[in-house]
Length: 299
Image 1: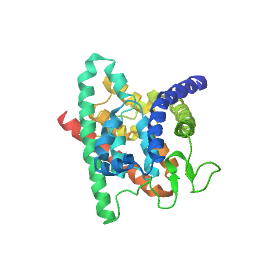
Image 2: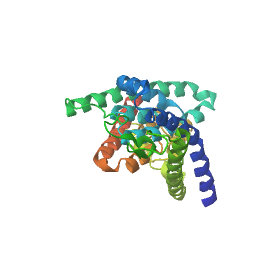
Image 3: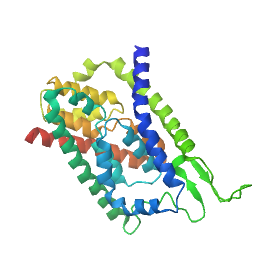
């Protein structure tokens, strides 16, 4: 059992590495060019964060939820963007459903609903944040400092100092992106392995037995399963739906509440704001449950 879980954890982790590296490479490039036009573009497009985050979240695997959780802890994106990415994330749902022609239509409906829900609640959270903070900026600029060139996004902070040959940062963005990717990858592997062992020990059958025949209770239970930070939760929910074990609404509840391993990264990287992390977690659960109930009424 251990070796099977170890293999699954390795494969699941390797799947997200390309996405992690490419996104961090872009982040590093922007971070090392803090006075150029790219930062100005990012500042101007913050209002579109939830929309962009929703589209990124739809991409299979939980790579973007992982990266966005890290960026949120650095205050590089808004809370609405993070919520949008997590609500739109479906992890392994798309590959599973697209493999069976009978579930193509439900898959398209699922994508459409998740996009709408992610965009609406993403902007709603940003609006609420503005109201709470008043005139304070929605998101601090994580790329520009008055006196320090702070590359927080790549875990390398550079004070203005004089090198022997240069008076500016000369770091290699490819190396910075690689180091940051390796750090997150190691963390993901350990977390995925532990969660996989727990799920394997409990057994899929035992988890399936928690669901009842009441279609209005199922979304609340499915949302709890969705919060399990592993691709196993999305696989479990989709396979159970395809087998007729739960309703479409219950599956939607779990997939909206779940964000893969992203929520673990959020709690790990954003440790100074534990109450905010808990609020985000509870919000995902409540929104997922609500979406599930509405889907059971109309879909």
